[in-house]
Length: 136
Image (cartoon, rainbow, N blue to C red; front, top):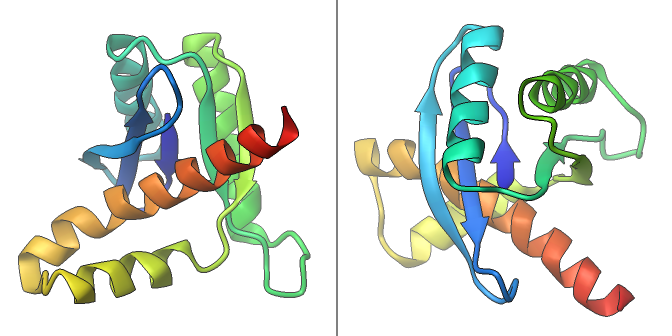
């Protein structure tokens, strides 16, 4: 499951068993850190997820900032809640790319706000799946 953690909205994406197709699952709208983690953990368990791929927003100069540290803590809490392993996946520019995809589909306004985080989660998951495919 791909996770694009945010302070207000957290996008989730899943893939098929063959790891060919990643698709948006939902957006969790929760500002409380622990309640958000619990909601994501519940979704992961309900979907029978095997691995969490957490977006890891490194700085453009490849350093780890406050936001990346918060995502790492979120991943660790998800691991505690689910027992699932996780991978921190570099998510630089995924939200920008998600907005570009939504421009192509002419998705605007409230509808865009509702889905952009799930689209970013798809991009995170697709990036990781592509990496795995080329490592085999």
